[in-house]
Amino acid sequence: MHFIITDERLAGTRTLRLSGARLALAFAAFSLLLLVLAGMLYHWVVQKSAREGWPVLGTLVQPLASDELAQRDRFLRENVDAMARKLGEMQAKMMQLEAPGERVSGLAGVNPNELKTVPGRGGALVSGRPLSMEELQDTLVHLDELADHRKDLLTVMETRLFDQRVNKLMIPTQKPVQVGQVGSAFGWRIDPFTGRSALHTGLDFRADPGTAIHAAAAGGVVVAAETHFAYGNMVEVDHGNDLVTRYAHASRLLVKKGDLVKRGQKLAEVGSSGRSTGPHLHFEVMVQGVYQDPHKFLGARNLQVAALLPPGQSGRVGR
Image (cartoon, rainbow, N blue to C red; front, side, top):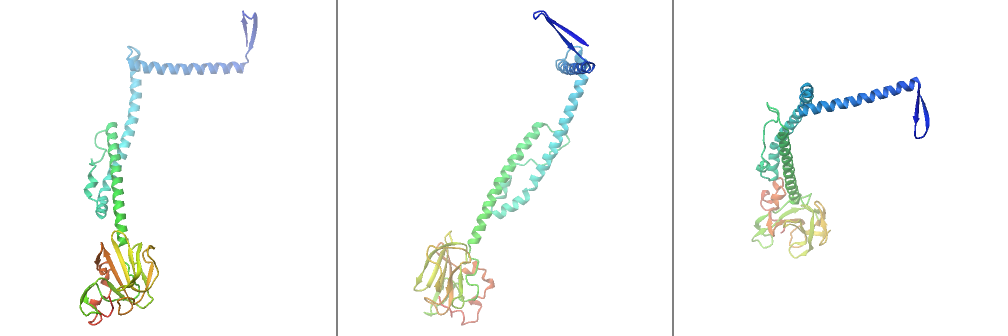
């Protein structure tokens, strides 16, 4: 097939030659373009007539548009119901956390009622009626607030439990001398030097000279490492929170004032220096400058204290 194109301004002609294959391809492209344009026009007319209610076309296309809208609404409804079920499961899990949360808060010393400062709504989200997007949005906001509250509360409980753990580590619960028996206990007794009643301010551990003396509490700072006329060679360790431990009558000191020590660190060696009648460690615990019975810190129920020994043996060790 030949096409002859004549241009008057150029005073010339052009010849366009199309073979059968090219002609078929051009026809197919033109038909496809018409189909696309027709589809777009149909969609625009249907939507326009359904939306604006054209007298004739509106009545004809209304069923088609209604069916399309119904399908879209059904799809959205199914997704909303799925979201509602998922939110219901999340809400139930948040409710289940209340019981263990109350138990842990009690251990941490936090008022369990604080768990309920954000009011719960209870119940399942999926009821007999469909839920609206607004209701789902409100529930999401509530769960977000509840999660933030639980997070803050868990942070408080974590801090409280950590503080309790630290305070527990600071208490002198480790025997300062691993080998040896307990001699004179804390309290009033007959002084071995004067023969009069006097307050024994610590707990004595009988041990061989040179036996290692270890820090009984958590880490601290050595505030004294010196020779005292009564305590002999002694070490005092400040553990913070007004807690001080004292180790007296040592034969040799292994730390000096200002040293940092940790629980179980070797501080000195057992001796009989100062006001002492034999090799032993005199161990004291002071809280805010007040002498405390080391017996209650060290779990001395398992120790053979002097009060349980036969008469005549409780006063053989010095101060």
